[in-house]
Image 1 (cartoon, rainbow, N blue to C red):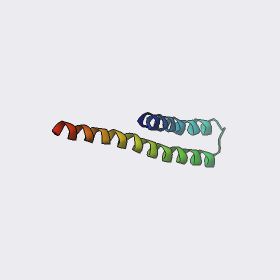
Image 2 (cartoon, helix red, strand yellow; image 1 turned 60 degrees about the vertical axis):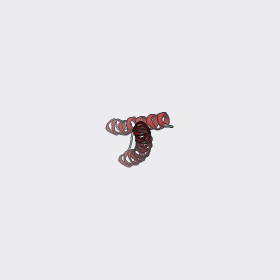
Image 3 (cartoon, helix red, strand yellow; image 1 turned 45 degrees about the horizontal axis):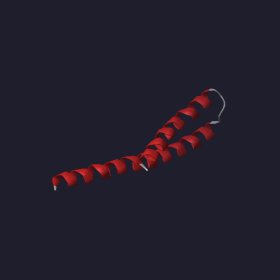
Image 4 (cartoon, rainbow, N blue to C red; image 1 turned 135 degrees about the vertical axis):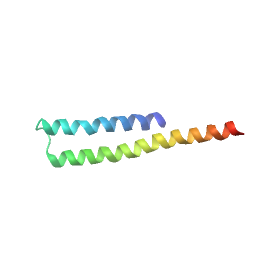
Length: 68
């Protein structure tokens, strides 16, 4: 699950760059750019949260195991 969340988060960051370049090249309208970037941002926040939340749970479990 962590690897999938990490991959989705990184792909969404790449997706954030694409519309800007396409807009500058005249291949995409401003409204489409805003929509695509909004969706990519939401996906990034969800995926990055899952990725880091999962990583944080592993660290807290390891700390409690070593304290015992």
